[in-house]
Image 1: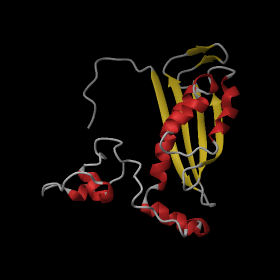
Image 2: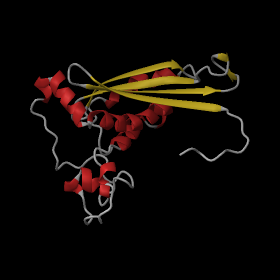
Image 3: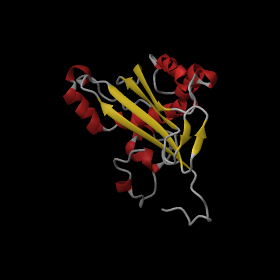
Length: 209
């Protein structure tokens, strides 16, 4: 569904956030996120001088290496373009994420470790999408089978626990615990009554957030 037609306007700013998830040959997972900000007009930057339209104001990113329990084992940062000379001085602080587990309380812990003057606003913003992309990357049964084939010494005895709360549960309207989607995909966690006949279950089978 497209937006309704806008009022007359002028395009000024573009922000692109790109996230990618990788299964490594050693059985670990790399989750990467980049953020790029550009303007449609010339910017007079006090440090970098005149920046033509399309030249990034921000071009920076993070890579977290996690295990199958979502514990962070390594952090890499990049900052190719920044608006101020001192922005890169906080990059070493992101090593504080090592040992942290992506899960409940992730955003709160990130703010404690890297909020305010301890971090870069734009890199901290990426740690929210990185968390959800980590789950999206690893959750598929197809991907789990790929992991077993690639690194059987790590994944041979690891099976998903159907009693464990799914990360999507109660995260939005569709995945509320009494919804038909949860009834179909995560029946052990369904809290509603049986739905009336006529619900299109084909739409729900295999649905991912």
